Length: 609
Picture 1 (spheres, rainbow, N blue to C red):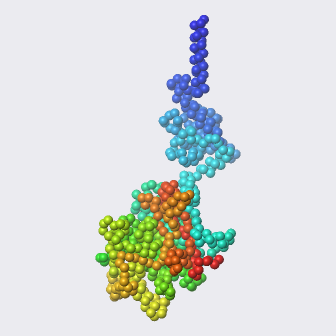
Picture 2 (tube, rainbow, N blue to C red; picture 1 turned 90 degrees about the horizontal axis):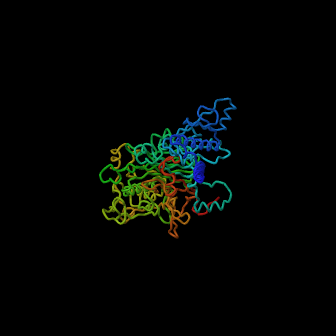
């Protein structure tokens, strides 16, 4: 009996052990041949529980009852609410959309139709396969409405995410003057007199995108198609609603098909195409109910028509317009706006410096209004210069614009780096034949102004060919006609007008300031702004506006043109969150720049509301 009791105790322990295992799962005590079918049963049972808990009803394929067939590999999952709606309409059962579900215990995928496509979280669904544990649980009362709202395609979802991120980053930030005006105005929404907004945007010509497609391998392929990009660019332009549009890399073939639609928005504009076989250029559009065109000047930086002018052998261009406020005939209500696209080559800053000197000389020609009676220095209309300069802040060319002078002799010949360890730049940047002084002025124009001052007249007009040695394909039919015309005009010497001339030194009197500070402090940390990606997120696009020199303090300050606010740029870290541009909300590989100004008619610093 003792032996039998021991055996009975052993059987009881074995039976207890099997019962304990059954609580964890009955699969372990099944035979090897049935274990696979048992796991499949557990998997299907779990799917049925999660699907029904999320508001879905599960039935086996070909059956209308709730059951699980172990021999059937297909489980049909559909929405209860949708089925009830179909019953009311006396129609057939709704169609099921199929997904591929990866079994947690098996390598092979199990084809299971699941609820609508975006039911699984976008952040988790990288392929067409999902896991059981990725099914959302617990459900919400409005599961069906949530699924309906999330049934949008991936493009709309990604665009909304990027749009939300950009809206958090890019906002209008008032300047010190604009903030002061807001406090003075209080809650009043009355618009300021003579205020306007301007937008500068490198829109990326589609031909250049396709020619350099290797630069956009990281981008979403959908966002690179012109059909998609054109819609995104158009939406950006409409939302900006700027009074002046300054655009770079405008494709010539899109002028009549795409940019002509700006006329329906009340814009009129001028376009300048790059020379030779280039298919893009720069354009300036302005609202006709705000401004009227008074004068216009296309600028071609290519002047390599004979030996000695090789520093200006690149086909970059600029365009300058002189605008007046509608309803006014006073020169106090005029401004000069320019946009340009300088050479990209990061190793040829000497070419960019020469192009900038040519641009400043043309700005002097269009913005000049006379001499200051007290100082005897030239007076100019307010000037705004925008564009893609392809240079970073605090580089020599940038310093020439914002500081008003640059000593370039002794700098490295091409990079303008300091100190110079190789060949240094010569003391004369532009050849003598171009007749542009170190003061960034045309020598022929200086002579003409001197004659007008002696005669006491300021309204006599002269043809550009008589005061400028620059070649322009719109003025001359060919290089031969240009050479023939210029051969009749004698060359002038800068010393005849300015006395002793300091070589290797450039200066101008526009007193430019940048709308953006390029570096700003957030949460006690200094961050760098960025406008595009060139091996890294950098700033190469700018909006400069002219100021005035305070005669007492000798400091540069705002003149008649005052900055009200600017549209903030993202930092480098924020750009990394966007991953790459162009995307579904930014139609170009550059960010747009925007600013708001007010044009004062007097010289006081207090604006009359």
